Structures are given as C-alpha cells and as structure tokens.
Length: 87
Image (tube, rainbow, N blue to C red; front, side):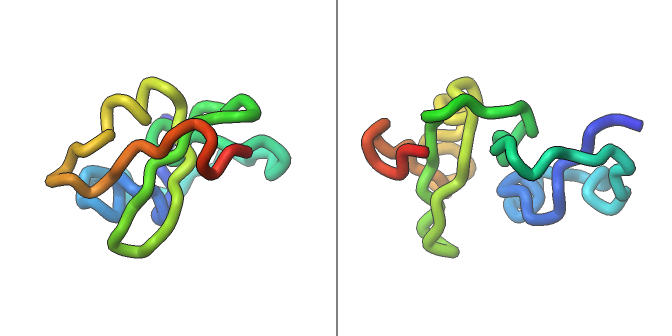
C-alpha cells in the first residue's frame, strides 16, 4: 500500500489529496520523528515551516516542499524565516 497523506495534511485540506485521502494507511509511524506534512518524509531538527493563515497554524515541511508551496495554491502558504518556529 502506498504512503497516504493523513486527513489533516495541508494537501488534503487544500483539496489536492485526491481520492487517496479516503483510504486508510496501515503503516505505523514513530511519533518521536516529525514528518513533512506534505510528503511525509522524516524531518531533521531544525526544519522549515510554512504559515497557513486560514487556520492560523505553522505547517512542518521538508526543504523541497517548503520551497514548492511557498505562495502556492493561491497564496495559501507562506515560507517562514528559519529562525521562526524552529524545532
């Protein structure tokens, strides 16, 4: 079974998760490792964050997704400086 974005993923909330977000992943994950909320890769400490103004929250992201989604999807996400929200 392929890795599926969790229902709370920003991609699913943005309507970009497609029909995949209805399936349930059977893969278990360690809660100790933060993961990119877009592509689900494990994140280093520190890692990048995007600001999502609608729900007023920071979204954890890998470097590739942070750059890809900065001001994408109609300006829905804004890349934060590395010092802000550092983990």
